[in-house]
Length: 496
Image (cartoon, rainbow, N blue to C red; front, side, top):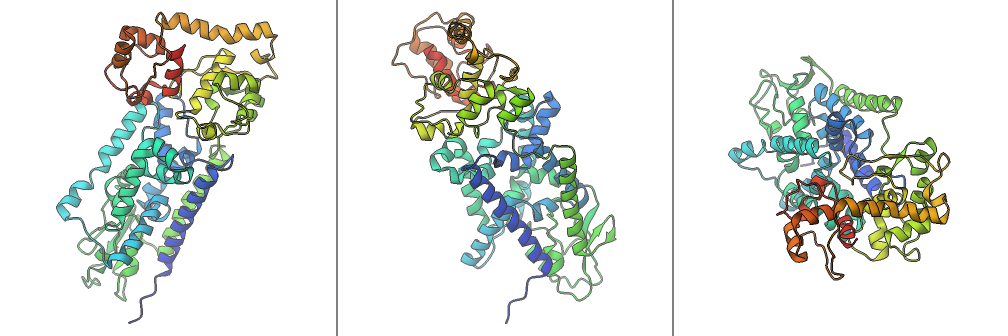
């Protein structure tokens, strides 16, 4: 018996998902190799929800994200209100990736498995507390809390090499592997049980605009619609598909074998042609892009440092991992050699064209972070900077408008460069000596450091410049996101 041809609408859906997945993959690979290519943080729509929470809380965007993220999440919200979880079924790169592994699983096992209904019913609620937790911690910490655990971010960094991937996205990578393996057995396992963006769309889908309706007098109760649904929604037993799990893929509609319409796509109660539904979905997405373009918000790549300097609106926090040492020096009016001296780097090993995020690999060192460069620039210029998760970051006037420390006479340069260090020494209470062979580790707590150096925990906190309320019994590496420091910075401070 010849295989039944796939309906054109489903071919279009697979093409749409394929374009999104391939485009996303190519961009993330190019981002690792070229400047000016958006990172996963700019392409991940859920980041828009997180940065929106931060913006509403304090009027600032999360540093790793751009206003374009809000355009993306705005488009998804509009889609969710009008067409339920249409984004999940037609535009989601991670949903497409699960689909690829699901196809592989079907070829290998010749069947699809189903989670027991009782277990499935409980697990589907898991994504909602995950969403609440992410929003809460984003609001309170003002940082991209989901990033280290995000399997999509881990996927986007596969081309960066395993060492970098594991160092930054170890948990995310493990989740990625588990989800892809799970997808070989169960359709869209991440979408059903874990995805926080899916939870947002599920909530929005409660607005009863788009629905698949079943015409009972023409339905033959063959249950084929149930079998083809990737989200395991029971279509054959309801008059209208009100489940928040429906991703508007319309597989059930196209699989119905009756010659008369038994399953119909409706919008506001009015029956629509399936292609009309698709056109509306595309129109909403394109419309959001046009609005973003008109308001100058649809920018997935941060402006270059030199452009910000020209406009007179540059600050230390604008330094990105994709910036080069030459760009940083030029934008802030710092001599390149002085920047390298401050960082303790060898220009022969680390050329000035090196991206900051590639420093560790190029120089053959460990634990080098972009924030280290930000602190170095702030120190040279004598401006405040509180760390990647901090709130203090003074605007720096460009060289053309103000003489910088690098342009001052040698005696004045020395005084300017040393001033922040001397001030820090006075305010941080550095009244104890640290042995040359002492190594500060992220697994240490403040109590461990105090015991090893035979000083009080208060002295350690002051020397490291940490908040007075920081827990003294927890590993330092577990607190860096909450308190806004890097282990590299602390290692430098303990030696001062």
